[in-house]
Image 1 (cartoon, rainbow, N blue to C red):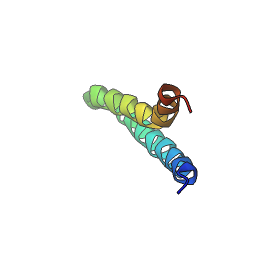
Image 2: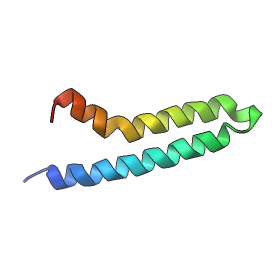
Image 3: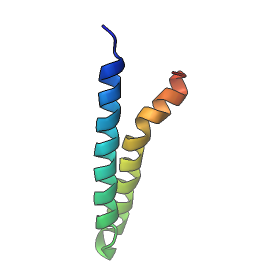
Image 4: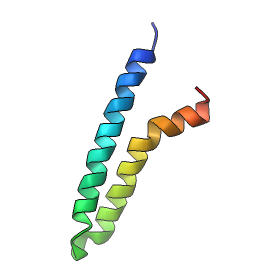
Length: 61
């Protein structure tokens, strides 16, 4: 079985999920009480969204 279609769909899903987490974190960071939590969520969302690209860079595909 060729994993390319599955990897391609997972790539889009991780980008979308990471984008939503990042936007939620940035929205939460606007409130002074939740600023640190919001920034941490935004950073985590960025890492989730960038994980397929980072994985491809490490593996070399």
